Amino acid sequence: MIYNREMETNLPNPVRGRLLKEPEGRVRWLQKGEASRLIKEAEQSLTAPHLGPLVRLALNTGMRVQEMLGLEWSRVDLKNGLIYLGGIHTKSKKRRSIPINKESREALLVQARFRAMECPDSPWVFCHADGERIGSVKRSFATACKSTGIKDFRFHALRHTFAAWLVTAGVPLTGVRDLLGHSSITMTEKYAHLAPERVREAVAVLDKA
Image (cartoon, rainbow, N blue to C red; front, side, top):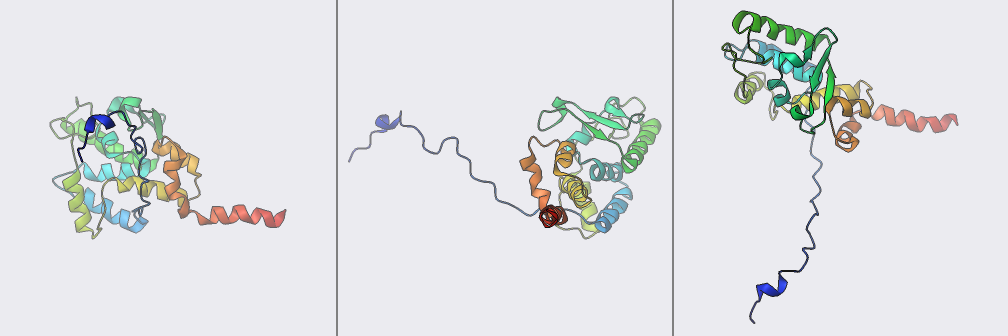
């Protein structure tokens, strides 16, 4: 039998536009004790003095690593306690403002003192002594994790940790969504199982009816 490719050139592809469902994986996040040990180890790094403040900022803002490494001082408002991310700075292409809590402020002040001593003209929050922007912390972060015995953990999981801490503290998923900059609540629902008490309370309303 002769196969004629030209006869099928106009046939529609039945699977075009259909995406395989993403498997529901395990969300890796740190307990408070693990996070404390990681921060302590990171702050003792001699080759990467910026790692400690970076980890602390990630745990308290949920920012992506490139959002932090690309952060300029012009978008840090310590007076009003906000970090501004424009659409060009975020993965979702949507602007968002991130509140600065006490831990975040202390991390930023460490970097401000470093800048004042080493590179006062640098626009970057996280930079080398010559003022150049830091491009990656993959190696130094892996070293800190290994030293503290934390396995199977990437920097991005600090963002999961931030979300997990908020949800277990009772913050609504919509609030977590806005802080993380998710484009939809569906992306945030992966953390819903961390707050079973809220679901239990919702069902308990029926007992009072």
